[in-house]
Image (tube, rainbow over all chains, first blue to last red; front, side, top):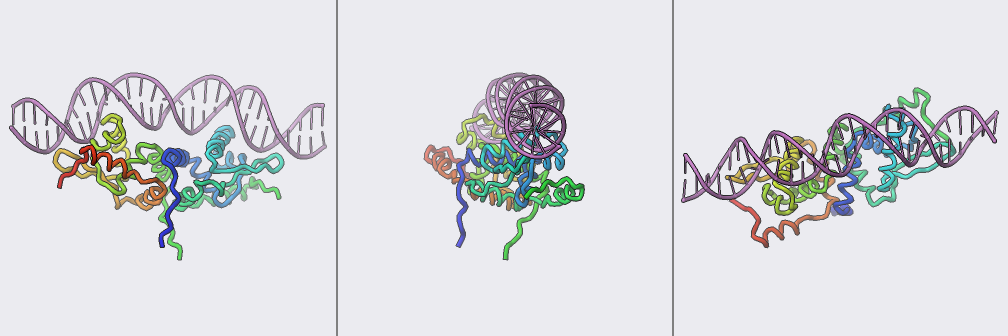
Length: 116
Length: 116
DNA sequence: TGAGTATATAAGTATATACTGATATGCTAT
DNA sequence: ATAGCATATCAGTATATACTTATATACTCA
């Protein structure tokens, strides 16, 4: 039996799609699908200013797509699995090629932040 | 067994998501999921200028999301099922509430174009 | 406490986008 | 041919967006 997707009102859906319709944010979301990342890692990965990264993350957080989790001086971002939009997001991310090589590169450079 | 979604390079994917990230275009695509529609119908439905509708359709056509089919003086648009993006689009449209009431309204007003 | 690091916000700018009105193009039918 | 309708394109405009630099805030650790 087909399971029907949970519908999302069109204003909200278009807003989310517009957010994902930016290459940087879409890559961030794909990375967050499998990893927790902090702002400085994104700065390293995307080679844009820390300010720009912060602004992208704020937009994603404002609609509840990601959540933050402070660990000491770092703030780690991850996908918000409780969002009503999570199913839609996962569906879309399935079509996006893995970005794990970018994380690997960070690890090789010794720039991966990990604090447990 | 899980069937893996066909991956789409991230530049292309973000471009498509940006296109769908507009309320008018997203509604158009949802309508086209179940109907062929011509420009003048969209003008009626969305109450924006014919020029604006035409420009939206051109953007959707330029990336191959829709195709056109001239019938006499009308040009009917429909989803391009041969697009590599079709699967992604269908996946997304599943989350969008039906817009069929807008077509019904046209029919009631006698404004639905149909030529066979 | 104060220096150093991580992140957020403010202000400004260049570009992209969605729209309008005017005009061009293409088809139909008299 | 030409009038009439459907659609596309052009030109212009107002707003949104993505970025930068500068500054503020929050935390850590000596």
